[in-house]
Image (cartoon, rainbow, N blue to C red; front, side, top):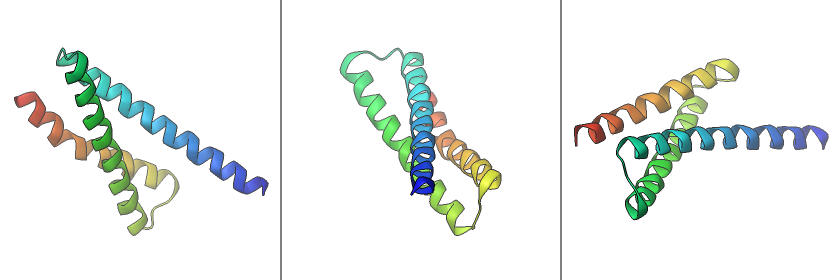
Length: 94
């Protein structure tokens, strides 16, 4: 039981950290675009949804490759960064 609670606590902490990182990156992008009001809210919602989708996809790919530990973390980090790079380039071009 104690192990289950520890695992649950660690997974929630990892998810919260990822969400905060995505939120900070999205906030920075909104500030760079000088968005405010409803436009900022809409942009942040889409940005955070896209970040969560990329993380889920990359986690699944890591599971398919049977990665664990540092290798999994490294793979997921690079995968999410690569997935968000084309979106960032497209939004910068506008």
